[in-house]
Image 1: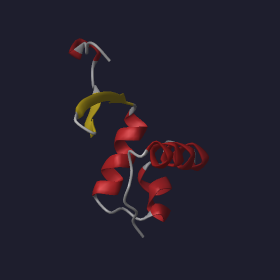
Image 2 (image 1 turned 90 degrees about the vertical axis):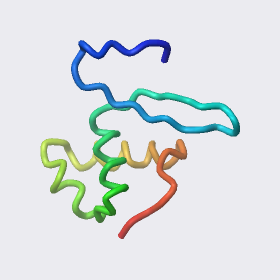
Image 3 (image 1 turned 120 degrees about the vertical axis):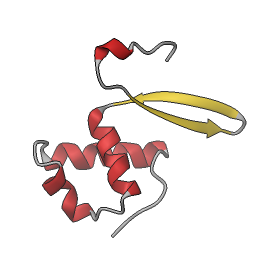
Length: 77
């Protein structure tokens, strides 16, 4: 990602390191919500309740992608 246009509205970004390199990646609103839920120790069973406008299959598919990618490395009850 080279540039962010803040006039587009809400923009979700994550900064992380890969060895000594700093990386910035754009996230979707769902990805941001899932990462926030992990940070807040929200139990898995609560995700479909707090993200009620999103189908549970989509929630858990995106959660799996974040885990496989290594963005989420801790787990909660």
